[in-house]
Amino acid sequence: MAKKKGNIGSSTIAQNKKARFEYHIDETFEAGLSLSGWEVKSLRAGKAQLTDTYILIKNGEAWLLGSHITPLTTVSTHVVADPSRTRKLLLHRKEIARIFSRTQDKGHTCVPLKLYWKKNLVKCELALVRGKKMHDKRATEKARDWNREKARIMRAH
Image (cartoon, rainbow, N blue to C red; front, side):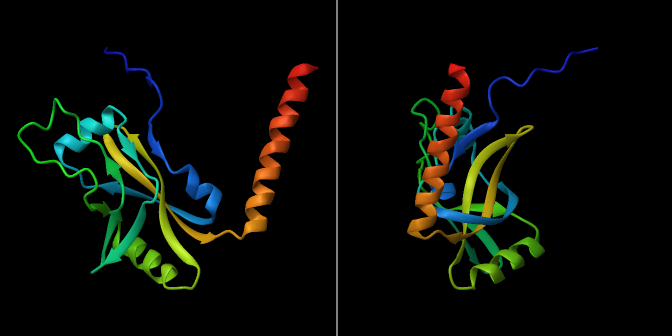
């Protein structure tokens, strides 16, 4: 019998850390991405960014806008690669309807949290979010600093 390969490295390709700091996360979804060949190869090399990326619902379809996948110079020689093109998200109709109705509320939006591998497919974790106020951001930062200090104290003793 053939042995299964161990999970080499992490399955996470790119994370949107800014989104977790800027927003309160209400609900998360998992969506597939419609990609071309050179994009998949670039993602395997870890050449993706999700900063300033958002989700747009248009004509009953979900689209990922503003994501940047840097093309590899060795792969995309015969194709004109657009690194920041709009990519289609693959979701169920009910999920798209739920996201659309929630984003129509004031103060709500949908942002991607991370790109990751699930077996051999690229998935995107989406979240319905509300914006944080300045005092919420300060409280988050204060809690993070306190946890870091706690860890230092525990290591010292």
